[in-house]
Image (cartoon, rainbow, N blue to C red; front, side, top):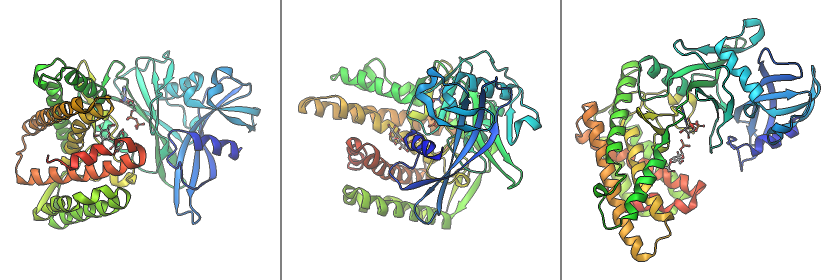
Length: 462
Ligand SMILES: Nc1ncnc2c1ncn2[C@@H]1O[C@H](COP(=O)(O)OP(=O)(O)O)[C@@H](O)[C@H]1O
Ligand SMILES: O=P(O)(O)O[C@H]1O[C@H](CO)[C@@H](O[C@H]2O[C@H](CO)[C@@H](O)[C@H](O)[C@H]2O)[C@H](O)[C@H]1O
């Protein structure tokens, strides 16, 4: 059985260990959904993946599985393998997020949490104020995701976390706080699923159920469409063509300011002294050193980047609070009622405990501003323009970027009531620089054809 599971995990799009040397060391069944019809068992299992020879690096992946006595042709694409089950005998095992029968049991468990005897270690929670549509059929999202998202009709969206760790999941904690605070800038939280292990006294948060923003448009796609409009009218300026994005950029600035204000009210608000600011500068400098090893072209910008980080050392303190932590246009959705921000999981590379640590709000602002710089460069790069057209588009790209960055930043600062003073400027410059360096490494590893995007940005002044 482990061999079949191992090959299936190796191919899964959410598996983070691709290209590394790893072993599947254990698979533990941690719960079973009640009320399954005869011939079906719906389980949740945790797979332990260990890297390298010394076993120092371990990850846990959640596997929601559907065990069927009979093969299910409609699920052939989601077959994990065939192995023996103590109740069903030889069973056909499928990835349950693809299976409507199994997902209906999950949804029902949120609506009416099963009794303690039936639920084993699983603890379903739901927030008051929304009646789930139990007749809704499930559909698995097909995008490039690090988790698995399943929509239930037009009503609800469930995110099944794949790589899991004991402790509070920031996506759930932040959605709960913002939902209870009545924020209009997130999809309301409906419920979540905990795995409670009394023996080890740990809880692992397995899934989150929230409002499905069915008709929303992705902010990144909207930005690209706006840039294409501008590029199609090469003689006009950004404010003269249809599809100008500056109004949306400003509304995004207000949305982020309001989310930050709610987070500041409901999570700790702290001040970090000069020693901590110093450590922040050092961390950025170290990231740069490591990044130059991976992207040698960064070296020509090293002196300027170090100077930008060094300016942090002149600050005697900074204010920190709960932030999003990984914000870009792809984490925003435009609905008819305004902008929503999604995916509060923080930077996936960071340990869970660190992701709920207070941070500077300028990190999120910088993340969005980098996105406004990316969008026109991506269109310019992939538009198939000749040399003369390219020069024109490069000029227009810079114009689009500057216009939307300014609209976003001005709206953010005035809505939050913060001054764009020296401290703000030093912090924003440092976070922008840190993010470009991160992007250079990200692109070198994942999309080498786009490495020129952060490198070109470094060659220009902000
Ligand atoms: N409540 C929602 N309604 C509709 N679409 C959503 C909702 N939340 C997230 N999405 C979309 O689902 C996709 C994955 O969401 P995300 O939270 O980023 O997942 P992951 O953690 O797997 O990256 C994104 O395209 C996002 O825009
Ligand atoms: O979506 P994730 O949270 O996994 O973030 C990673 O992937 C992003 C790309 O999808 C990457 O973002 C970079 O590319 C975006 C365009 O695709 C652009 O809008 C962002 O500004 C740029 O940083 C992100 O850096 C990476 O962590």
